Length: 199
Image (tube, helix red, strand yellow):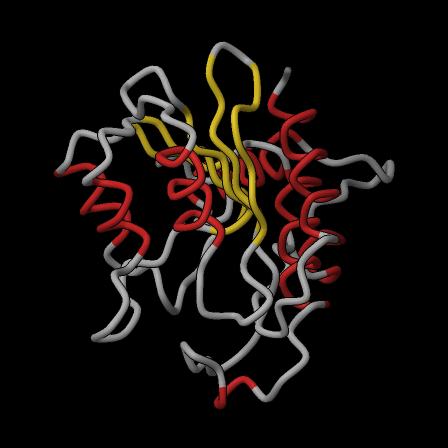
């Protein structure tokens, strides 16, 4: 399966969850085949990454460097005193490869550094459609007040936007075409963007 097919499957899998605090879906892949998958729990307490690892262990699946964890949302680096964050859970398993769709600015501040320290290959999918779908999935299933969540939030996730219209118009030359200098600046902006930065 391709990355696109795997994320398409995760978006379908997400529809089975009744999580009121933003649905996330995750799966474990080996040699291009999905071994186990899970959306976030209906009670909004257990996260998709946590659940998919638990399912794998129950099925006797060996979690090692040959496994890739795919998730629609960047794994959390902090939870609460009673539940370990997803980063801590993943690091202890032996999984060394993670591909995620959208960033989580509020609860994944330390995620990148902790994975790098643990020798985990951690990267965001380089596909704007998948990223946007993941944001819309999470936001559209956020049904309860954000401040009342298990992990309270200040705001919902944001859809990545290239540039506001006035800036785009400035890039047009007299013939109505984009000049090369503007095109180069857009490419540079994409490479430096958090939404497209390869971790």
